[in-house]
Length: 300
Image (cartoon, rainbow, N blue to C red; front, side, top):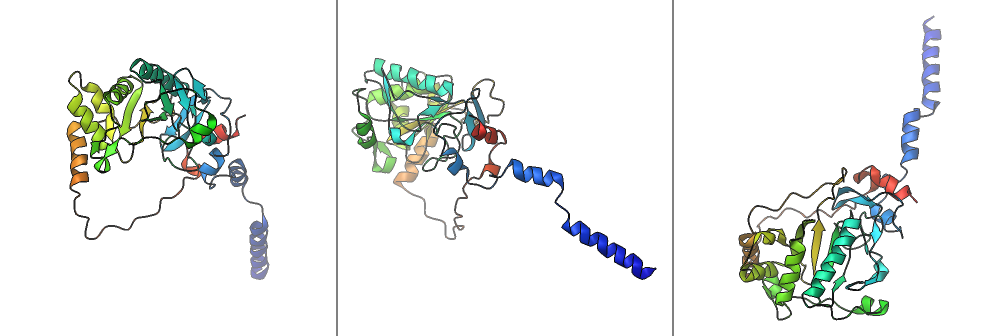
């Protein structure tokens, strides 16, 4: 009796080990075959936006966007640069903002604005460059005072942006003008704008020059680089339930903070004696992004 019972148990165990995996595991694997694929490879391959209602999914540095619009390559007061990158896409609010700012720049004396990277057609991590610009709410505006809106595609590939910094970003250089101040002020004064990144010396200069209402200065944030262009970031549009805003800037005009940045540039603090090892940045995979981003990729 004991031997027959043992043989029965062993037979059941053998059959169980050969049985197919539970149905829910099979469905899960089949439903998301790209779970561990680098997201930038999938989003970077898309050449057009999705045929969905406009929606930002996730955060500025970990997300994607449905229903993005392409900023026309050329308008009366703007030109999109580096067309080969196909990064002149944005949420309709972003496209509208860029066009509004271009008209304001013209009223201030420029011919308009040159627009750098916005987002890829469906947002998401970019193949190269930016960590943000993923949800269609970021736009880089070149510092060049635009003089004409008739640059050819070839010229837009080869023309260089102009740096505004001196002493490694502690001060502005001779290319900086009062019009730069006014264009940035116009951008920061727009209710849709959450913050604008620019090199520290520019923020300090604007703090010195502004004699009127200073509330807009709180949106101008010092950050590394950003001397060839300034980076505008919009807040999540109304109704964007799956969009995560960045924390608002600290109270006040932020001028003291910008001055600390400048002080550190001019008199760098000593490096730590035992700095922690720098871990290489891990590329985002599809599993890192909101679930909705699978649908954005799969949409027509």
